[in-house]
Image 1 (cartoon, helix red, strand yellow):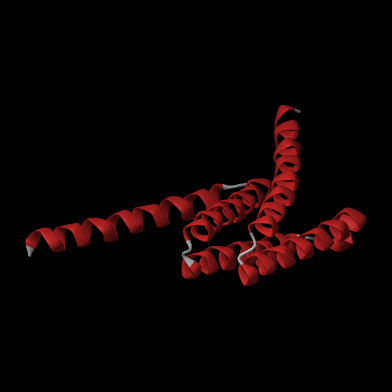
Image 2: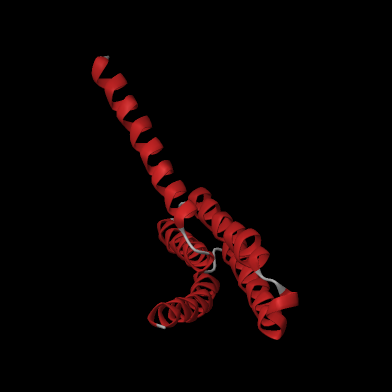
Length: 139
């Protein structure tokens, strides 16, 4: 019994350590880095969804797609400032909306092509965002 409680304590401790690491990373990140973290999280969730879709694990596929949707809608979309961002922000809002619809279709119909398309579109925006950050860092 003691090995079980030790394993459980280790698991709790490891989870707490991971949360602190993530929270520390978020607290010390620049606004640009926070957006990169959102892109990375959404893309990782899409990759997880693909693995679950291919293995037939419907529940986990749904959870992974829901997480990606949450990040796109409540993270990336919410971070847009259409007043300051103008047309670029408006176009990104339309793109994020389209990505959300692709993710919903991927979930509803277990459609890997929709998932692929959503991931490719988001990866394109993420790469552009990362490039902006690396150029700003060099200046």
